[in-house]
Length: 272
Image (cartoon, rainbow, N blue to C red; front, side):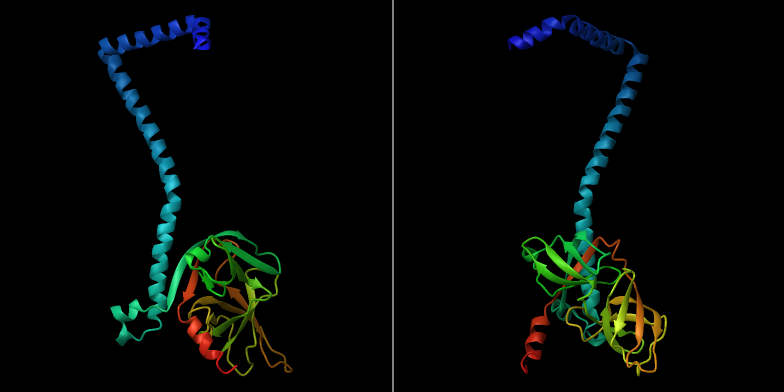
């Protein structure tokens, strides 16, 4: 308290001057119409600018929540599209849609690599969000990879830009299939291996996920055939695929929960 009194005494002249200035301003505005109008208009302008700035900041901080809401809505729409592909037109009803095989969980990429031989993505969804290893991951443009591991809040994705990645892929035109592989170095391209020379394939053909994959629904876009070659001694084509999605710029993805996958794996392992 003593320090406060000393401060006022030390700067008393300044405080008296400031008080008189405020008093003069009040008297001018109070008893002069023109000055009062100027004061009101100026106050409205300043108040409006402050309010607008505050609203802009508020909107900015609300963007994260709005983006998550949009991602969730998009996931629901993509779920319906993926599951409608599994239902014949005569069976499209509320009961059929209620028993969906594929569920999509929206996620954001928090860390990534695309320029090494073995590239991973880190996603901000983990076990508490229902994420488990071996779930497929896609974006709005195509496939991303497969979940390798998951902690409570994060998951690690082995992307298609990894030497251990092997995705069953098919030619949309002929339904013939091979294995999507990547040996670097360009993240824009991958190879389609084990594609028999007895099957038809042309530059420009569309490559999609195969019906034989238990990680992805059939028909997810992968890319288009950029180059193909075959020597007389080869049994398989050498095929280069231009990937449809740009993994370097992707930020948001969807993790696929195939609710029938465990059943399929259990049946397939009975004879082993």
